[in-house]
Image (tube, rainbow, N blue to C red; front, side, top):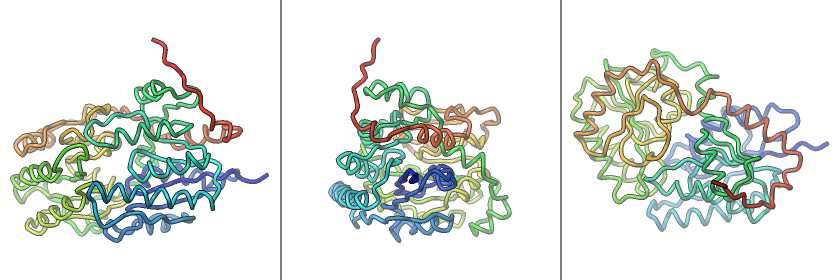
Length: 384
């Protein structure tokens, strides 16, 4: 009997971190064959060529799809989606997977879903049903849901929203966030080892800053400048560790602003990519995460640290008691950071699961007797 081929698509460092343990589970299963497609930021020198991390972790990459243009304008992003769709169409024809696993809501994932839909390939989608009002990820996420056949959500509200979209409740599973799996299963680096790895001496107080473009609003750079003003006002006794923004619209402008700020502040350092282990280990050592990344809502609460969540990029997501929301104004951000410095998160409960999502996802995928039977979908009406 031939092995069932499970194809995992990844385009970013953060997404790979969430998929890592599921990929390991598939790789170790004797009844399955793991196929890996990398694309997007993984293949870009500008974003750290992070496909190399995947290979160092012991995975074989089956296909690479180049898709990023040098432009991060709306036109450039739209063209990148087109290039990615062409690339996925060709790769899916070569690999002939039985099931494709997609995570999240980035435009690379939209391209993969489009190509899989017309190729009549079943999609298992992780992270659907959430709502984020400040970015076009919201529309992409729901679009991928409608093109997918099996749904793995991070919370019960998200599962209900997917059912509202007419998906079969039989194939909607609330498994929690796979990002928590990494925290549960990994020994994080000690402060001493981390300082050596980062070449950074922690101060008495420290922050990890992760800020991405807000794609449904104009000039993310204005919001980011407000954040930089607030960080500058903290003084040199607070250590600042930045991770660079992703490849969305205006991403390169924000990256330039980070570099300029770090060059002028000896207490700050920037990394193109920390990787999941160093990223989570850094969170464990700093006083708070500051920015607008989903990791501040999904993973940080499990490490009992506060998150200063800026603006509307994550508006609509379920939030733990450790989250401090604030508008994108310098004074409000500064006040929120000072609140985070004294906030007790020891009793925080993460609303996104218990750290066993990957095993649950794999179990449900293996229980599908014939993936092709999933292709013809019926719209399930929600009765009130």
